[in-house]
Length: 60
Image 1 (tube, rainbow, N blue to C red):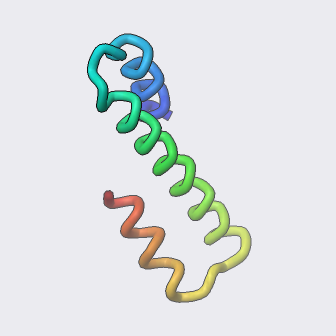
Image 2 (image 1 turned 180 degrees about the vertical axis):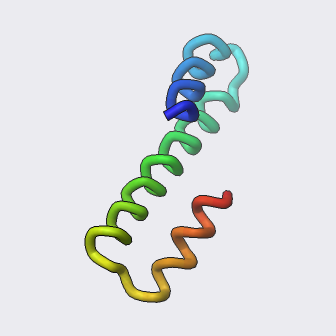
């Protein structure tokens, strides 16, 4: 949640830096994807190859 708040804040307040918009979108997308993958792992019990990809995204 903090990453989403900070990315929104940085996008609004630091808009004079060109790369901020890109990094804010990438950070927000990574957090959302990580949350969806974690929920899918718990609810659906994904196959074995799915678990390392979830771990790699969470460490990135």
